[in-house]
Image (cartoon, rainbow, N blue to C red):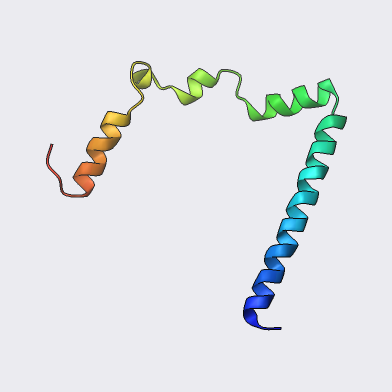
Length: 79
């Protein structure tokens, strides 16, 4: 088997495995009870997402303009 054939075979194997993993994930999600899904959700989401993701200085703006200024400085451009 050539190297190219080996690579193509691995790609095929991963595609098969990905489909099986998707099927298994969907099956587990369907079988999950409300209390288990709530428990998992509570582990993933902080009690107050706004406090974590939005610092006070970011309440009025996303920070994109400041990020663009930083990138410009990194590339030597002037404001």
